[in-house]
Amino acid sequence: MRNSVDHPSAGPSVIQRVMSILNLFSRNHTVITVEEISEVLGMSSASAYRYASELSQAGLLARSSGKFRLGPKIIELEYLIRFYDPVISAAQDLMEGLAELTSCDVLLCNFYEDTIVNVSHIPGRTPARITYSKGLPMPLFRGSQAHVVLAHLDRRKLRRLYDAGMSDPALRPDVCAIGADWPRFLSALKAIRERGHYVSRSELDSSVTGFAAPVFGEAGEIVSSIVVAANTGLPLRMPEESMITLVVQTAQVLSQRLISHPK
Image (cartoon, rainbow, N blue to C red; front, side):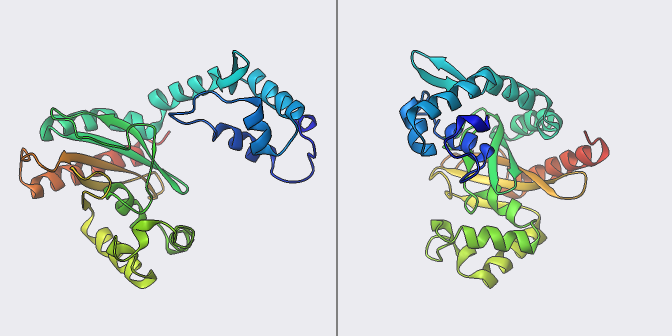
């Protein structure tokens, strides 16, 4: 693939170039052109076409009427994640049971380095209007899923994320008290860690209340969060304290499964 770029020894790595191309895709932009690839990579159209052709041969892209769409390898990888990811597999029946007990939506939000993604979603009897549906990256500083993840990161990584996210509106004190400054940010997360859960009210969607608890992996690291998303305007099937207890217990059982049966 190195021969496909104009100056292979300078600039972004091959992986960075591939990600730049894949990042062109979105819900509203499902096919891309050679011109777009040329612009994002800063190379000639001929080199961009050769680059896209090699990605098509690898299955990451597929030609479609002179343009390119996501290829079969992406579908294969999505299948493997959906059915064989250890966290998703271990959580499935627990999430279904939680949705049945609460009548609310249940989400599994996995943490990947500096990104939180809704990887599994079980609708409740009265589905909530959730913006960040399955497969979408979620805010790192807003929402119940984010608070319980951040609360269990080590300080060095937390500081890096905090510094990188200073432009995030959620870190402004007038938007969210968690980000007033670094000491208060740490203090707020410590309180969440001690409680073992977090309840968000209209932080991501104005009509949704989120109840979240942390999920830990084999080495005791934070890997995910279990979230119950309830319609704010509708009465809960049970008191909030009971809802919180169920979410925390579900997350604990899932954590124990991951620790006892690592894959």
